Image (cartoon, rainbow, N blue to C red):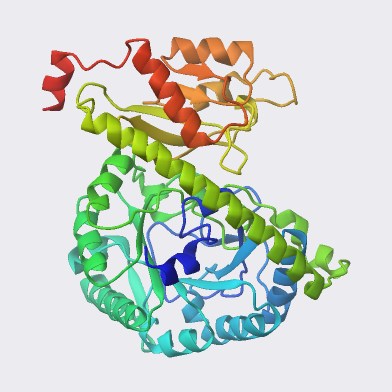
Length: 470
């Protein structure tokens, strides 16, 4: 990776897989209006129990947003990124969005600024975004075929008119592609988000990935459709299913041959605060930040020191990762690649790139694939928290059963600690619990367990397995 790009992404939790273990982000909800309708979207307000795009507890003015950003950055020194992602479309609310960015670039110059958009109004805003030092932009591109687009977008609002069907999708696609090209030409990093909708655009997204890569997009994030009926979206009400984890992984792998893939996305709320996978928004309501005393100059000094320490740790981790990759390459050169099959392992972590969470405290598991070629991150699986205490787990059979279903395909789960009952149920389901690598770096521990599995003779590819893979 060129050094100037590495400098832009090394501490951005959305653009860097390693950074998301260490750095926090926040979104401010200053953009309530939207200029398109998506069948997977239903914007909700004051809804504390949903974690998905378009949901917020309160819409802020630009002045309130700036005050909140400074309060969060002073309280959570790991925060590096401020994004505007809704709850509507930021560029359908250009005055509110750009005024927020203008004030933040002046008052909080050490914060990276990002915007996420559907792209309809993007071309006319590119110059203004560049002026406000926005160097990370996310565009949601679900298709490049208007016929498919008409199945996803019932209408757009364009030039003061509501336009429907294939015509609407064609305009949206043209604007997205034009905006992408304009951003890349100005050296702005572009991440493309795509929602995987089974039976609608799942196969088509391979073509999307090829096209956006050819036009210079830095990263592609293929996300699963969220379609629970209780969210009230058109797809949810009509019974459109979400993809299975294996389907999502297969599509991400198919697209990965064309460009860098983001696999650690959590599909955050439009007012999310904290590390990816957590939300500390309740700590920073308008009422609460009014009583906070914020010395942002002092906070920036503290943040700079913490960020430098994290960077040093990440550099050390990168060196270890390179050594680990060297061992994996040696195994490939020795001809072991086809001899041992890959294995999926789930990891319980509360951050820092370590195995540092009790099985019962996890609300999500990170999934890694270990093979003779190395360790790679696959994605995350959300679960309901099973354990209700610090040391013992309560009577939550349904939550445990849900966790086991969510870990389908995994052969091991690595955690800092696990109770007797879930241990037995996991083993019965063919998932081996492992608490022997607590507080160890994730990738090193996963490879260590993989080697143990090889030494035990569990991973030999016999003729039938090889034939099945052929």
